[in-house]
Amino acid sequence: MITLTHYLVASALLFTIGLAGIMTRRNIIMILLSIEIMFNAANLAFVAYARAWGDLGGQICAFFIITVAAAEVTVGLAIAILLARQLKTLHADEVRLMKW
Amino acid sequence: MAETVFFYLLSLIMLGAALSVALNRHPIYSVLSLLVVMGCLACLFVMLGAFFVAALQVLLYAGAVLVLFLFVVMLLNLEPEALARVQVFTIRAAGTLAALVLLSYLLRLIRPLDGQPTLASLPAPGGDVESLGRLLFTTYVLPFELTSFLILAAIVGAVTLGKPSPDEQDQRCQTPFPLRDDRAKGV
Picture 1: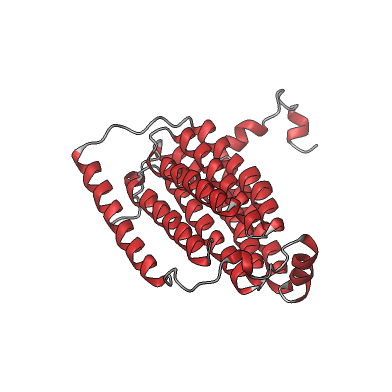
Picture 2 (picture 1 turned 60 degrees about the vertical axis):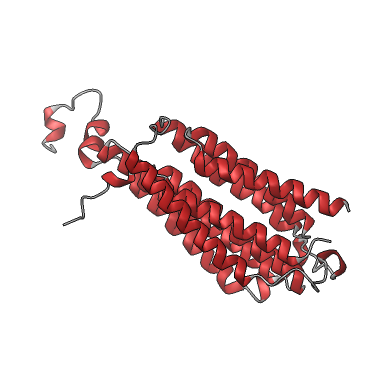
């Protein structure tokens, strides 16, 4: 009784929760965490479509999303640690050295 | 029947944990809630027949990315977020409103429930290691090789960003005993 729509609604809800996390959180590490939720929501949509259309390309895409997310988290967290070292704070509003 | 029960149970746990990630004041609880989200997602992948992707989700995502987050959160020793002031309340309201607008758009895109075949009735594409591996090395070999470059760039970037600044490095590289003068002059 579970159709493709069920999985897509779950994916849309997860994506929205991730987006709400990005926009309401002010800590940089927590923003990165909410971005990970959005990645996972997209993964769920891809794998659900792979099941619905009988096409394995969706699962391949999920595989690549996981890999790219791992690489991005590595560099993103390195940048966050550098920011914490320089600015002594992780508040997103304090990152404004490049503002005019 | 069992599929329905498992789907709703897993989805509820997953969405509750995602809400905890987005709303929790303690950063460490947020990271651990994300672990719950990834676990539920892996179970949903198994229900969808994507066994290899589910294993990768647990190994790579929960086992590497989350551990990285945990290390950073514990290293930086983040404190719980301060209690809400008026400014933070406005930001939170605006962010939630924007997210709800996006949700309405997304839900409009999804086709309605009636007349759709259940996923259990469709033939499973067989997401085991062999079929995915075959695809990865034939049709999708170019992205597969490009990800190796991406990972190399990420490693080099992370190591470069994590290196101490030059004056720190000089202090650290100094020998514990001073060199004799004739050696320093190159005699």
